[in-house]
Image: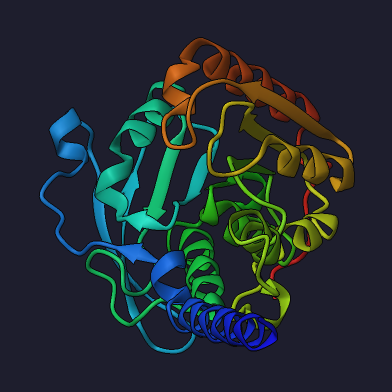
Length: 283
């Protein structure tokens, strides 16, 4: 009987080790799910846009769309989520345009037409390059830039906002850290030991000193609502928390009226605040 128990324990240890090693090796495929084909553009929505190619600090060429809005005061720098590419965000681009906001959305390395392969440090470099393109090539003042990120893109956006000046940071449907996500999906694994990524959104947010709006759905089936509450607790003032409803991927659509009202209110607040709440100086 003892030998049988020992054999069972050994088998369980082997299975556990194989599972842990598999998770370690496959992390990149969980974190990054890029697609390359782009067959729809803002033109499908009758929106004028500029197809942009710009270079990162480490020499890669990235692709993005600059979609101007008539008489816009602010430009949204859009850091999208981990799946697909910029083509899959046309609904959000259209939303921002209808709100009177210009938008610059870009693909991270390895996504869409952008060169390279995605890495954590690479995504931070990509966001910085996009920001510098707006400031240096389009001559858009930092006080007119709203850094926006959804899901994984929110962590990238928070990292950027902790390093540069901007009018505001808006993060949506995101997480506190990569390790915390791992603990949620694999509570039985020593995630902290296996984790190849950090994406410490909560730490970046502590260093953001521009106005922050956090948007999250209580129904989010991927990113727990408690993540957003923890982020809100550490956000510097002024900050705003908006609760929406619906799933992780389409909550902003399901909650259309709430979402639109929240953005309208936030934009009015930013206009009233003027330029007195800028974040950190770009490095």
